[in-house]
Image 1 (cartoon, rainbow, N blue to C red):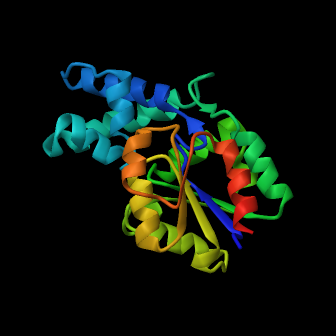
Image 2: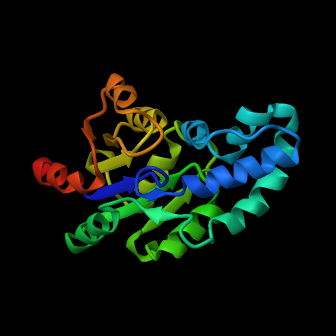
Image 3: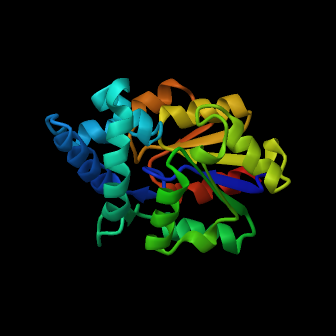
Length: 216
């Protein structure tokens, strides 16, 4: 039986790609680079903001880029409409709490940005644990972040379900030895997710309820 549901954030529960694109392009322009398309930026997220900067400006300029990106992104996330819940997210979180499931966030975003998003959207109270890449030794796809959450809540790995939208999430769950439902609402395509053969693939987050009923 599943007792703990851990979520990735971007592309799984929320859409913050507008804010990310604005901050990435502001950073690129500040450093003399041409801007990139929203789609290209969306396809490049998932490994944390420093890896995102390395992808676009290279390792040598990554620290300078981060110094520009992070202050801008702090404000970009707070702009009205820049961050939105994906359809079905709020309904799903309410259902999980009503049914007594433990819930958590495992994100490669820095803690500061994750908490801004959760507060802006008013969903912080739904989560028992929020753990991000800057609070663990190794980020996803290393399994540490999932193991740490399960340990804090005293839940066996066999009772954990992880939900994410990227191939990095599928690989993280596999390494952690937990069940994983990939939701095709984020940066990885449905085909990319299928190729890795996660435990389940869903088109929308509100299909999670059916999976949980099936797993009982």
